Length: 556
Image (cartoon, rainbow, N blue to C red):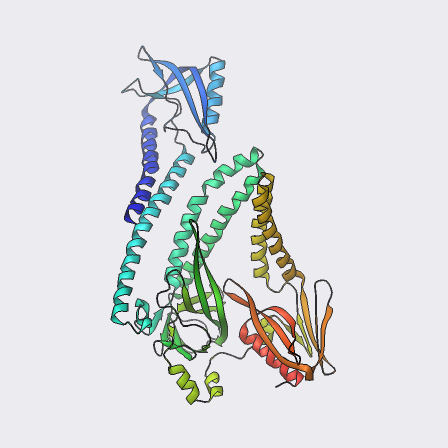
């Protein structure tokens, strides 16, 4: 890792050093003397590359200084060909015009060494910026590789030491789980977002300089490349948002009653807010059980997080004095989900508590990774206590069916179309990228790959249309439950007497980002499954909706 980091670091220093040398020469040339010169030859060399062509203007010119004749070949400061801006093309065009008209061109001569001259002494700021960006990217990446490699090795050694010290207590293998006060993940997330945003914008920024020339030359497909710097702008906004949250709220802590938290038991904790926030603010508290998976295909590695289980609460912050808040949090953990992986690494199970609130000015967010493990104590506690009281130990206000996306009017439950705008927008962007890339590849005569990309884009776009247009309705009339759905008009899909309803239940079939989406089902007395509604959010609110339906139908 050290050798790899050193290669990146010193490779980045080379263009940075060249940029500084060119600046030095340009500043030095400010004292050179303007001297008439005759252009005798000029040429624009084109160097073909796999991705793009580069250019180099060359020239030969004669001039006299202090009665002596000299021949010069330096056009500008800097060596080698490039395609940053249009300097070489413009210089060649101008020099060719002066040569054909036999006009005198101004050369700048070093009075201390008249044999040294240059035709263009101005600094090429675009080239300088590109070289410095290259240096920052590669040297910064090398320094980052070295730092994070050393830090990762140090953490691994510490984790190995803790594992040997506590072989039967995996919750003690992680440094941040040594005490009952868990630090928020805000700080590492904030720095990761900042570094990643800077790196992405540095890498993609040259596109802004190359794109206008490509589009003006008729290469309109190159507009697809504008997505990369636009994504960089989004990442910069994300990083700024995290820093604003930090300046407003600081980093929160979660004070656990005990470590570890028992799988199937009760999360008993207090959220400590470092600054005073207004009373009456609503906190949304979401608990996720996540399976992290890392897969390798050739030289590429991809990591994804799949939400196995999710539940959430809403808590109203009481209006009390003090410089910080202690907010009680009680969550029942399911016994049928896996325990946490002590050292996740590339793959494993993560239990994550996410707390957020829409506060005027700057929203509040904090996340914590929880040590959820099997100790056997949870099963004993549930067996010894009344299970109903055990579940009542949870905090949070009661579930609200309207928060799941349903509009209730008497015995009518209406699920409008286009109620998940952020999901629709995200899928639309995804389908546009794949569809546009596929169309571009097919235009460039890469029909096979282009067709696959375009097909994926079309399939995702079909999902976008479904979310945008599909609506559902549940009605309770004359002792029966009626379910309707459709895109442009509602069509009756189910009509069933209440005594033939066996159960109403939910199942998650999709998750996007940090949100899990559920479908609402009904089983009739023959065991046949019917879909009542799709893409509902918030497990607690949907369970409140189910209770509402059961009470209305008279079902136990």
